[in-house]
Length: 143
Image 1 (spheres, rainbow, N blue to C red):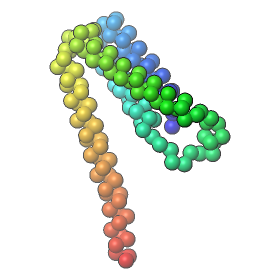
Image 2: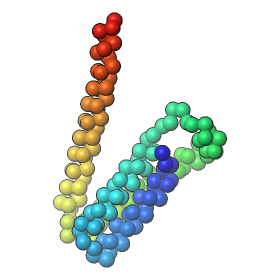
Image 3: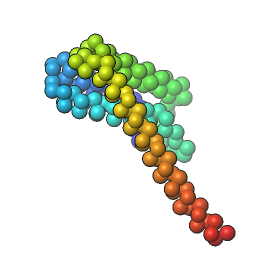
Image 4: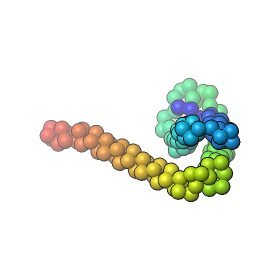
């Protein structure tokens, strides 16, 4: 697992690529490809921020010496930067270089993202229920 700061650096680099591509009037496909890479990097950051290691490895115990306050500042900085990038992206759609897609394009992007998030959550919920049932049902027969 990568740390949130490394994941955020990746998201920043990809976001700068998006801004450059948009400013130079690159093809829509290239801009959307960069947006996809950025979204993946942001999801990595969010995953790192929500991931809690219950039992860190011995290597991590030995080498990882950040204080809880430093970790909290890193997390706060990462969350704030993601918020800023999403705000800039919205600005690009409404008034910036992606204005040809307009508010409708941004709204569609948000709707599609929410739909995909619901589908993924539903898939994992069903998968977890199936795995749980596959262990529970045989145990019932044994009892």
